[in-house]
Image (cartoon, rainbow, N blue to C red):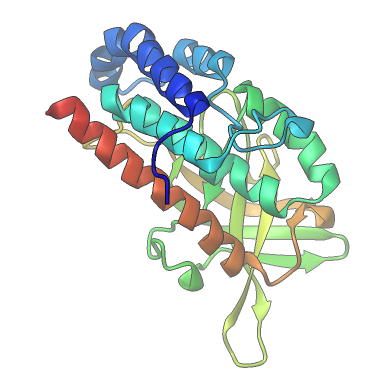
Length: 261
């Protein structure tokens, strides 16, 4: 098996490394100290093509393979973990579920702006009493007529409270299975929806230049067609999404170590 990078991947690595050294390194310390999310560097990362890297060009993506995305994440983390987190979560957690599980209408509506970095999308899994234990999610969504009514909260959700956040994918309990286990489904909630609030979190130990939010849903009502994929497939969708996310976390660890040593 050949583990060497292709010429295109080497070019990508060098390009992202040069970008991070030139554009991110000079501002990273100040952003961390101020716990500030930079819209300027966000725009520059979008211009470089760091969002929608593995998404088909049909939806405005870069059409690269997943290894290329991991390489870019590693190089960003080599200079600054916060910007790497923005890129990693923006791709694997924000764009990923929409790209892999969304219908054509959902993809056409949301992906183009996410792939250019004009907008961000959150991944609403973690709750105050349920971390990556997706099966223990307490946020509920009840189908009333042709609308979902969502109640509950999420915490530590990356990219979910910026000025350019377009929405979040929310894991909800939508019923009970025949064996007594909760039926879990993913529902799309757009920013500005009545009953939905996102509050930025501060006081983190790290990733302080990355946007992190608490989400609140109080009789938040969205159309039935905002269901992502089939009803009851939420657990599977979240687990597949996290598989990709964990690869990027590994890349961030490697990149951070390279930056330190």
